[in-house]
Amino acid sequence: MKPWQRDPGTDESPPDDAEGLGIDDLRALREQFVDFMLGYKFAIDQVTTKINILREDFNNTHEYNPIEHVGSRLKSPESVLEKVRRKNYAMNLAAIRDNVLDIAGVRVVCSFISDIDTIRDMLAGQEDITVLEERDYITHRKPNGYQSMHLIVSIPVFRSDRTERIPVEIQIRTIAMDFWASLEHKIYYKYRGEVPPNLRTDLAQAAEVATQLDEKMEALHRQVDRSAPPAKHPAPDALDLSVLYHNLTAGQPVYLRPADPPI
Ligand code: 0O2
Image (cartoon, rainbow, N blue to C red):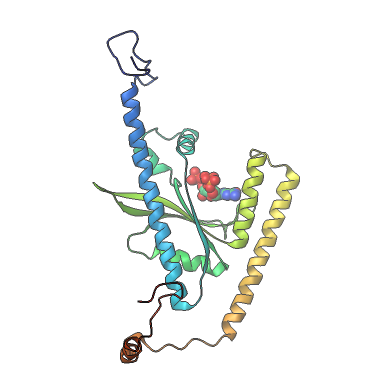
């Protein structure tokens, strides 16, 4: 007999686990969990695409890009189950879906503080996005100094046989906030959560410096914005496309972006 192959009729059958599950049940359970996690991966892909569209569209329309970079992470199965155990939630997929809202995480890093609200509003205003929760750690900075805007949204994911609404945690913050958070994260893990008091004080001071830098950069940004003359564009509907037509028929290619092939 192959190791762990199910044989309910003999003493040599593989040992069942505490819930009385055999190897086939465990295999099915694992497949269901993988399928469950796949929905979160698809939700990350969708939110990331939405943000990349906003970035490109914003750049084209406003000649300015509020998004410095976008990152994402899917919580590992171990940390999902560890959180369920730690928080005492029921150990089933429905309870995980309802309670663990940061399995899919997307992080948007912006240039300026005011960009955070801009991105927030643009995402929250999209028809298929429902904001479930908002945690504003910028207005209410965490005691350790952590600052970030967290939006918990749900988004429909169209699977081959069903539609699922999946929660995604979107973290929106500035470069300075992100710089601080990534260093604090490293320190936290290095000391396994027991950060020495002197380092905690230094981190809180560094968070204050990051806030001052953000405020200074925001003020400079506003100043530059005010002094730059507004770009003049005719209303799109009034554009005379015959000029473009003559240009194209004369062999002048039109590029969406310099790196793209001409259309
Ligand atoms: P990782 O490494 O990103 O996976 P909840 O149980 O959901 O109500 P939770 O999970 O503490 O409470 O929610 P919260 O406070 O919104 O935090 C979620 C995520 O925000 C964390 O995920 C971190 O990414 C980030 N975060 C929150 N607080 C801090 C902090 O003090 N420092 C840093 N560096 N990041 C923070 P994970 O799963 O903890 O970590």
